[in-house]
Length: 638
Image 1 (cartoon, rainbow, N blue to C red):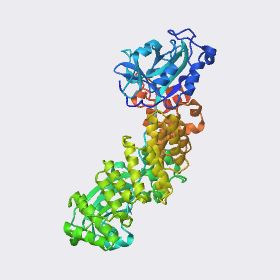
Image 2 (tube, rainbow, N blue to C red):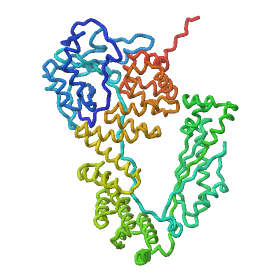
Image 3 (cartoon, rainbow, N blue to C red):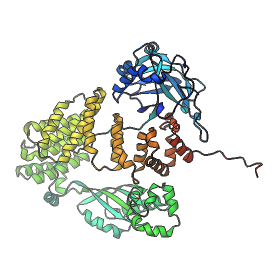
């Protein structure tokens, strides 16, 4: 059984959620330490307290066999180091939890489901082995054939010198890695004066177009201001991407059809201004994001806690409400338009020979602006396969800092043409730095590419060299945002490799740099969520909670923020009983009832754990919201 990474679970002592009853007689060979637990399990508690948070373990079932998986054999051996040390597995069934009745737990001091026999150190050593990913896998035993693995969960009882010292259950928590932040390469484009003289080979422009209520057609007269802005005498439209938004009232299918029709009318109107064909891409959706944002602090704020269907039902046929809120809804009907333009090539640059001659002439005359423009034309034509890439080798650039822009752009073109071959780009910039050693923009581009390569593989990486580059750039006059992004990306990659090497202290130092950079910055909900999941991926659940705790309780927090906050905290009964936490639970069930109810599914079915129902506050909420009583037979009733 080979796993790339343990499914991330949190391991919680069951005593936090449930008190087990029954007599204190031994179960199998497991003894009850009673009031002497602190003394009899002292060594175990000291070892557990010393474990890094990165040490994870879980129970898994595969083809009817139950396994214990531990991601560090070294730490496993610290726990199970005595012949009387071992573990047992308690199989908990979903049917033990029913609404309208007490939870049906075993009458035992030791367990609450079906307890399987314990195995001890000698048997563990004979059944355990390391898999290809260095996970220690212990084959515990066969799942009883009458048990459906999809309807059960497994708790772990940890035995030390035949005393039951710990009982743990596992729950699922979502996590994610973090790709490198966008760090664009330093490019030298045409100056504004040169752009006016020559124009750019291609460019992208963006427009926002509002729509009136129930307006279905966007006519040519309305498009003319866009046309005038585009200056289609020198350019033609290559591609149009339109994201069309409707306001949220009304049936969904009608809103989507309406926006698709509006967007298509824009495309059709623009097509009438040119002979060349246009590639078009249209997306239509309701503008719920801006609706939820704009009603905060208004008399309509209560709708932010309602489901989408409930909001639509409230609007349906309610003319006074629609009139009162129209000043908000009206701003949500619009189209975001992105237009990609390409310059019409002048006849004098259509011949490769003429293009080369003009480029060489611009260098002889030291007309750098014209040389940059002609270089853009060459890049554009190579990209369209009108010129071979070898054409660049025919253009000899002076080895001087004055012509840095041309050298830089040529190296960037190599990167753009071969995005998967970072070595080519790194070699290009390294060569440029040999005769332009003090150029900080070249060093910046080289550093960005080295970071990207290191993120993929450490085969050619030299982290100290990369850090040296970054320190050198910090003494330059480059924009602070660029330098901050370099530092963050360095720590993202460093965190990964330190974690893989189990250098947890070093990993946490790099991770803290990232955490401290962002924790006090205002972040959009999507960015905040990604950051919290990233902290969870590296077992810093405390930092993930710290990032979300203020935002998650606010009425306009996104649904994903609310549910991830619950995922991090819902096993803590000290929190679930608090009134402010109950409000978050209520908001979650109002936003997405099905998603709320699915939290209580078995871990194997995508839920957190059904053992959340050991918490009376959660069980009460679940049964009120999710439990559907069977219909009563009406025959014979009065």
